[in-house]
Amino acid sequence: MSSPVLSFLANDNLPSRDDIVTMCKEAGYHRRGIPFRSQPSEAISAWIKYGPYVTMAEALTQDWVAKALNADPGAAVRVPQVYQAFTSDNPDCRIGYIVMEYIDTPDCDHRDVQLVAKAVQTLISLRGPNTAPGPVGGGPVVHTFFVEWTSPITYETAEELEQHINGILKFKGDTRRINLVADARDGLRLCPCDINPTNFKKDRDGKAVALDFGATCFLPPSFFAVAMEKAVDPFAWKVAKHIRYPRTSDVAAMVSASYHLVHFGRDDIGLPKDLRQRL
Image (cartoon, rainbow, N blue to C red; front, top):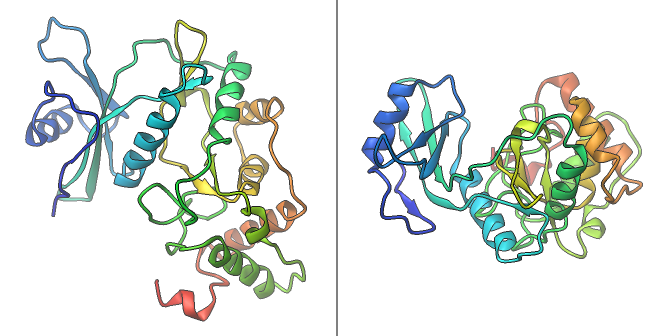
Protein backbone atom coordinates (compact mmCIF):
# COMPACT_ATOMS: atom_id res chain seq x y z
CA MET A 1 0.00 0.00 0.00
CA SER A 2 1.29 3.44 -0.89
CA SER A 3 1.35 6.24 1.65
CA PRO A 4 -0.66 9.41 1.18
CA VAL A 5 1.24 12.31 -0.31
CA LEU A 6 2.19 14.90 2.29
CA SER A 7 2.56 18.45 1.05
CA PHE A 8 5.21 20.64 2.57
CA LEU A 9 6.35 23.82 0.80
CA ALA A 10 3.88 24.43 -2.05
CA ASN A 11 5.28 23.95 -5.56
CA ASP A 12 2.79 23.76 -8.42
CA ASN A 13 5.43 22.76 -10.96
CA LEU A 14 6.03 19.26 -9.61
CA PRO A 15 5.09 16.11 -11.52
CA SER A 16 2.41 13.78 -10.20
CA ARG A 17 3.24 11.00 -7.76
CA ASP A 18 2.81 8.39 -10.51
CA ASP A 19 5.13 10.32 -12.80
CA ILE A 20 7.74 10.59 -10.04
CA VAL A 21 7.61 6.83 -9.44
CA THR A 22 7.96 6.16 -13.17
CA MET A 23 10.88 8.57 -13.55
CA CYS A 24 12.76 6.97 -10.66
CA LYS A 25 12.04 3.44 -11.86
CA GLU A 26 13.41 4.30 -15.29
CA ALA A 27 16.51 5.88 -13.73
CA GLY A 28 17.11 2.77 -11.61
CA TYR A 29 17.61 2.21 -7.89
CA HIS A 30 21.40 2.29 -7.93
CA ARG A 31 21.60 6.06 -7.39
CA ARG A 32 20.80 8.49 -4.56
CA GLY A 33 18.44 10.69 -6.55
CA ILE A 34 17.65 12.41 -9.81
CA PRO A 35 17.10 16.01 -10.93
CA PHE A 36 13.72 17.21 -12.18
CA ARG A 37 13.24 19.75 -14.95
CA SER A 38 9.83 20.97 -16.12
CA GLN A 39 11.26 20.98 -19.64
CA PRO A 40 14.47 19.33 -20.89
CA SER A 41 15.93 22.73 -21.78
CA GLU A 42 15.11 24.34 -18.43
CA ALA A 43 17.20 24.54 -15.27
CA ILE A 44 16.79 21.92 -12.56
CA SER A 45 13.80 22.91 -10.42
CA ALA A 46 13.80 20.09 -7.83
CA TRP A 47 15.78 17.10 -6.62
CA ILE A 48 14.11 13.73 -6.07
CA LYS A 49 15.76 11.55 -3.46
CA TYR A 50 14.46 7.99 -3.47
CA GLY A 51 15.25 4.46 -2.39
CA PRO A 52 14.34 1.71 0.09
CA TYR A 53 15.99 3.57 2.98
CA VAL A 54 14.25 6.89 2.34
CA THR A 55 11.50 7.38 4.91
CA MET A 56 8.71 9.74 5.84
CA ALA A 57 10.52 10.31 9.15
CA GLU A 58 13.54 11.63 7.23
CA ALA A 59 11.32 13.96 5.19
CA LEU A 60 9.53 15.33 8.25
CA THR A 61 12.82 15.89 10.08
CA GLN A 62 14.42 17.63 7.09
CA ASP A 63 11.33 19.82 6.66
CA TRP A 64 11.35 20.84 10.35
CA VAL A 65 15.07 21.63 10.35
CA ALA A 66 14.84 23.53 7.07
CA LYS A 67 12.09 25.76 8.41
CA ALA A 68 13.97 26.34 11.68
CA LEU A 69 17.29 27.25 10.03
CA ASN A 70 16.26 28.93 6.82
CA ALA A 71 14.27 31.49 8.80
CA ASP A 72 17.57 32.68 10.30
CA PRO A 73 19.74 34.53 7.74
CA GLY A 74 22.68 34.26 10.12
CA ALA A 75 22.59 30.46 10.37
CA ALA A 76 25.83 28.76 9.29
CA VAL A 77 23.99 26.08 7.34
CA ARG A 78 21.13 25.86 4.86
CA VAL A 79 18.78 22.93 4.34
CA PRO A 80 16.75 22.23 1.17
CA GLN A 81 13.02 22.79 1.63
CA VAL A 82 10.83 19.73 1.19
CA TYR A 83 8.10 19.99 -1.45
CA GLN A 84 6.60 16.52 -1.18
CA ALA A 85 7.24 13.08 0.32
CA PHE A 86 5.57 9.71 0.01
CA THR A 87 6.22 5.98 -0.20
CA SER A 88 5.23 3.47 -2.84
CA ASP A 89 5.33 -0.31 -2.93
CA ASN A 90 7.30 -2.18 -5.54
CA PRO A 91 7.69 -5.98 -5.93
CA ASP A 92 10.73 -6.19 -3.63
CA CYS A 93 10.32 -3.46 -1.00
CA ARG A 94 8.77 -0.12 -0.17
CA ILE A 95 10.45 2.84 -1.82
CA GLY A 96 10.50 6.30 -0.24
CA TYR A 97 10.56 9.55 -2.21
CA ILE A 98 11.47 13.06 -1.05
CA VAL A 99 11.04 15.86 -3.57
CA MET A 100 13.07 18.82 -2.37
CA GLU A 101 14.50 22.17 -3.30
CA TYR A 102 17.50 21.91 -5.61
CA ILE A 103 20.41 24.09 -4.46
CA ASP A 104 22.85 24.50 -7.33
CA THR A 105 26.17 24.61 -5.52
CA PRO A 106 29.25 22.36 -5.55
CA ASP A 107 29.60 19.34 -3.31
CA CYS A 108 31.87 19.49 -0.29
CA ASP A 109 35.04 17.44 -0.29
CA HIS A 110 37.60 16.36 2.29
CA ARG A 111 39.12 19.85 2.34
CA ASP A 112 35.92 21.36 3.77
CA VAL A 113 36.36 20.16 7.33
CA GLN A 114 35.90 23.54 9.01
CA LEU A 115 32.93 24.51 6.83
CA VAL A 116 31.12 21.28 7.68
CA ALA A 117 32.11 21.65 11.36
CA LYS A 118 30.37 25.04 11.50
CA ALA A 119 27.28 23.48 9.96
CA VAL A 120 27.25 20.56 12.38
CA GLN A 121 27.79 22.92 15.33
CA THR A 122 24.59 24.70 14.32
CA LEU A 123 22.68 21.47 13.74
CA ILE A 124 23.47 19.98 17.16
CA SER A 125 22.31 23.18 18.85
CA LEU A 126 18.73 22.71 17.62
CA ARG A 127 16.31 21.81 20.41
CA GLY A 128 13.72 19.15 19.60
CA PRO A 129 10.03 19.99 19.16
CA ASN A 130 9.02 17.59 21.96
CA THR A 131 10.44 15.19 24.56
CA ALA A 132 10.18 11.94 22.58
CA PRO A 133 13.55 10.67 21.28
CA GLY A 134 13.52 10.06 17.54
CA PRO A 135 12.66 11.81 14.29
CA VAL A 136 10.09 14.55 13.87
CA GLY A 137 6.65 12.98 13.79
CA GLY A 138 7.70 10.04 15.94
CA GLY A 139 9.25 6.68 15.16
CA PRO A 140 12.31 4.57 15.98
CA VAL A 141 15.60 6.26 16.80
CA VAL A 142 18.14 6.20 13.97
CA HIS A 143 21.67 6.23 15.38
CA THR A 144 24.90 4.27 15.12
CA PHE A 145 24.38 3.13 18.71
CA PHE A 146 22.19 0.37 17.30
CA VAL A 147 23.51 -2.56 15.27
CA GLU A 148 21.19 -1.84 12.37
CA TRP A 149 21.24 1.92 13.05
CA THR A 150 17.55 1.74 14.01
CA SER A 151 16.10 1.14 17.49
CA PRO A 152 13.87 -1.94 17.91
CA ILE A 153 11.01 0.16 19.31
CA THR A 154 9.77 3.73 19.43
CA TYR A 155 10.64 5.39 22.75
CA GLU A 156 8.14 7.83 24.19
CA THR A 157 10.56 9.44 26.65
CA ALA A 158 14.27 9.76 27.37
CA GLU A 159 13.62 7.63 30.47
CA GLU A 160 12.53 4.69 28.32
CA LEU A 161 15.69 4.96 26.23
CA GLU A 162 17.69 5.17 29.45
CA GLN A 163 15.98 2.02 30.78
CA HIS A 164 16.91 0.13 27.62
CA ILE A 165 20.57 1.11 27.73
CA ASN A 166 20.82 0.35 31.46
CA GLY A 167 19.18 -2.98 30.69
CA ILE A 168 21.94 -3.74 28.18
CA LEU A 169 24.60 -2.90 30.77
CA LYS A 170 22.89 -5.07 33.38
CA PHE A 171 22.55 -7.98 30.93
CA LYS A 172 26.31 -7.92 30.35
CA GLY A 173 27.14 -7.64 34.06
CA ASP A 174 28.34 -4.05 33.72
CA THR A 175 27.68 -2.18 36.98
CA ARG A 176 27.63 1.28 35.38
CA ARG A 177 24.30 3.06 34.89
CA ILE A 178 23.50 6.13 32.82
CA ASN A 179 21.11 9.02 33.42
CA LEU A 180 19.59 10.27 30.17
CA VAL A 181 16.80 12.05 32.03
CA ALA A 182 19.36 14.42 33.52
CA ASP A 183 21.17 14.65 30.18
CA ALA A 184 17.96 15.80 28.49
CA ARG A 185 16.81 18.18 31.23
CA ASP A 186 17.22 21.14 28.85
CA GLY A 187 15.65 19.32 25.93
CA LEU A 188 16.65 16.89 23.21
CA ARG A 189 19.11 18.03 20.54
CA LEU A 190 19.49 17.20 16.87
CA CYS A 191 22.03 14.42 16.40
CA PRO A 192 23.46 13.94 12.89
CA CYS A 193 25.33 10.62 12.77
CA ASP A 194 26.39 10.33 9.15
CA ILE A 195 28.98 13.07 8.74
CA ASN A 196 30.79 12.77 5.44
CA PRO A 197 31.45 15.31 2.68
CA THR A 198 28.91 13.79 0.27
CA ASN A 199 26.13 14.86 2.64
CA PHE A 200 27.03 18.55 2.37
CA LYS A 201 27.36 21.24 -0.29
CA LYS A 202 28.91 24.70 -0.12
CA ASP A 203 27.01 27.74 -1.36
CA ARG A 204 28.31 31.00 -2.79
CA ASP A 205 27.83 32.79 0.53
CA GLY A 206 30.29 30.54 2.29
CA LYS A 207 27.65 28.46 4.04
CA ALA A 208 27.29 24.71 4.03
CA VAL A 209 24.13 23.01 2.80
CA ALA A 210 23.10 19.91 4.76
CA LEU A 211 21.50 17.34 2.46
CA ASP A 212 20.90 14.04 4.25
CA PHE A 213 18.68 13.53 7.30
CA GLY A 214 18.28 9.76 7.10
CA ALA A 215 20.50 9.22 10.15
CA THR A 216 19.46 12.34 12.04
CA CYS A 217 16.95 12.64 14.87
CA PHE A 218 16.47 14.31 18.25
CA LEU A 219 18.18 12.70 21.25
CA PRO A 220 19.73 13.51 24.63
CA PRO A 221 22.83 15.63 23.86
CA SER A 222 25.38 12.97 24.85
CA PHE A 223 24.37 10.84 21.86
CA PHE A 224 26.36 13.08 19.55
CA ALA A 225 29.52 12.22 21.51
CA VAL A 226 28.60 8.54 21.13
CA ALA A 227 28.23 9.02 17.38
CA MET A 228 31.67 10.61 17.20
CA GLU A 229 33.20 7.83 19.30
CA LYS A 230 31.73 5.25 16.91
CA ALA A 231 32.48 7.12 13.68
CA VAL A 232 34.57 5.19 11.18
CA ASP A 233 35.01 7.94 8.57
CA PRO A 234 38.26 9.92 9.11
CA PHE A 235 36.42 13.00 7.83
CA ALA A 236 34.02 12.79 10.79
CA TRP A 237 36.98 12.54 13.19
CA LYS A 238 38.48 15.72 11.74
CA VAL A 239 35.14 17.54 11.88
CA ALA A 240 34.64 16.53 15.52
CA LYS A 241 37.88 18.28 16.50
CA HIS A 242 36.34 21.62 15.52
CA ILE A 243 33.00 21.16 17.32
CA ARG A 244 32.08 21.95 20.92
CA TYR A 245 29.76 19.27 22.26
CA PRO A 246 29.01 17.72 25.66
CA ARG A 247 31.03 14.70 26.70
CA THR A 248 29.26 13.47 29.82
CA SER A 249 30.57 10.74 32.10
CA ASP A 250 27.87 8.47 30.66
CA VAL A 251 29.37 8.37 27.16
CA ALA A 252 31.86 5.57 27.88
CA ALA A 253 29.13 3.36 29.32
CA MET A 254 26.86 4.13 26.36
CA VAL A 255 29.57 3.17 23.88
CA SER A 256 30.17 -0.06 25.81
CA ALA A 257 26.45 -0.84 25.72
CA SER A 258 26.44 -0.26 21.97
CA TYR A 259 29.28 -2.74 21.46
CA HIS A 260 27.43 -5.26 23.64
CA LEU A 261 24.65 -5.15 21.02
CA VAL A 262 27.19 -5.79 18.28
CA HIS A 263 28.33 -8.93 20.10
CA PHE A 264 24.81 -10.36 19.96
CA GLY A 265 23.89 -8.88 16.58
CA ARG A 266 20.56 -7.75 18.01
CA ASP A 267 19.12 -4.44 19.21
CA ASP A 268 16.46 -5.76 21.59
CA ILE A 269 18.94 -7.01 24.21
CA GLY A 270 18.21 -5.47 27.62
CA LEU A 271 14.74 -4.13 26.80
CA PRO A 272 12.58 -4.07 29.96
CA LYS A 273 9.56 -6.36 29.90
CA ASP A 274 7.03 -3.56 29.57
CA LEU A 275 8.88 -2.11 26.57
CA ARG A 276 9.28 -5.50 24.88
CA GLN A 277 5.55 -5.48 24.31
CA ARG A 278 6.17 -2.92 21.54
CA LEU A 279 8.37 -5.27 19.51
